Image (tube, rainbow, N blue to C red; front, side, top):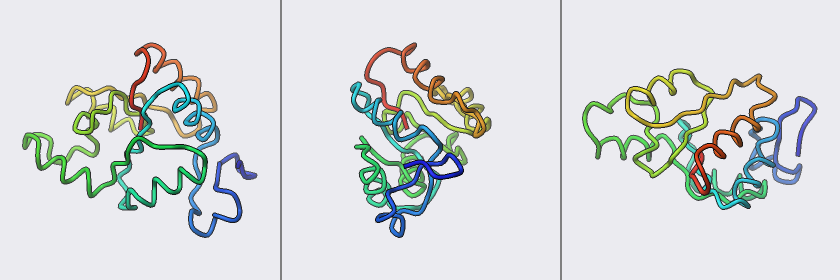
Length: 145
């Protein structure tokens, strides 16, 4: 449900549990991706529990394929080569084909370590079109955080 600032939030009855807002268009995009057979993941540097994130998105009507939080990320990096220490996100460790992020630094890490990143600026009103186009170019049924 969009608010006055163009962000999307949980229905008012759930806002005490899930006060965070998502970027405008996120809920519709994620629902469409799931409907089209994509396995949608959330990859966050926050320490919110995966269970919390799953419930938050479930309240918004989005069924997630998985959640990677900071704790899970750190454990996964320990299992990979030492060269990955300090990398903020590493989607290949979770079978994620395309990472959508707003950080150019994550894109640099992707180039350096061989994973695909689509950077979408926070102010980009056409970001959902860019995500859809990037997925269309990759083919059907990719995982998208």
